[in-house]
Amino acid sequence: MNIPQPPATLLELVDWAERRLAMAPLAYGHGTDNPRDEAAWLVLAGAGHAPDDPAVDPAARVGADAVKAIEELVRRRIDERRPTAYLTGRAWFAGLPFRVNEHVLVPRSPLAEPIAARFAPWIGARALDRILEIGTGCGCIAAACARAFPEARVDATDIDDQALALAATNLGDLGLEGRVSLHRADLFDGLPRVRYDLIVSNPPYVDRAAMEALPAEYRHEPGAALGAGEDGLDVIRPLLRAAADWLAEDGLLVIETGRAGAALTARWPLLPMIWLEFEYGGDGVFAIEADALRSHDFMADARGG
Ligand SMILES: C[S@@+](CC[C@H](N)C(=O)[O-])C[C@H]1O[C@@H](n2cnc3c(N)ncnc32)[C@H](O)[C@@H]1O
Image (cartoon, rainbow, N blue to C red; front, side, top):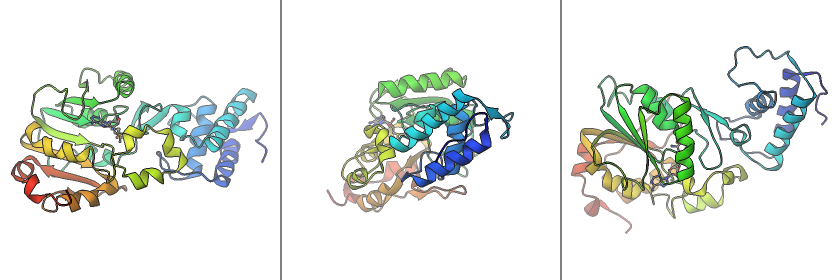
């Protein structure tokens, strides 16, 4: 299928790119769920426009260089099965722009929705002093928390230095470098000894079988950001056990577990996790209050070794 020749309109190019993508065996799940949206992102990037630029006219005509750049982006999306966000270097989370590269997960956590709602009804209008995000990647959840809780100081961690470097750039771009402190830490090991009102994490949680079955697109993401052992709980298990010691008296812990939630419930059936409901899609996120964590007997409740 031939690409529209210059001077082609942006709309003609989006239609062409959509048809090309739709004919290829691609997986979606990195911020879009359909070839039309990805076609629009690729065409706008190739033509040098931001995807949220209100001045972009779909009838605008582009020259030979832009057509060539668009053709190359679409070719790479199909041949390399590379997520669009890595090709354009950009992703959005909670309405904020982030640079992304292959050292960080492409942001897509459903946590954007409860963060925007300030985790109501648990937190809501209550003012928070300190927030911790564990496993920040490009910094998206920490930045969204800093925006939603302007009164709070935010600490954000990762074990990956390159992820932390990119998060620092993103926080600087957003003017949040004075509000969010980055720490190289393995879970809590490497953090200042303080108590947090809110700890939030989208940790690695993909189990071994699911890792082996991942579509090619996901293999461009860092394995250490996705995989978490046989049952997907290698990071969540120690995080949960340690969290009570880092939470304030009336603190809240919120963890995204994806499908590892089933293994978690099987492991500690008496742990009083509250599974969040989402208006805009998503699941596999629970909240638990510091009190409940503190009084839970992890040893007595443990099933399955
Ligand atoms: C699923 S990604 C989440 C990235 C980002 N917060 C988001 O939601 O897009 C998990 C992140 O946790 C980091 N990570 C993995 N194990 C960790 C650990 N033990 N302590 C801190 N961070 C860890 C990974 O490097 C990765 O950046």
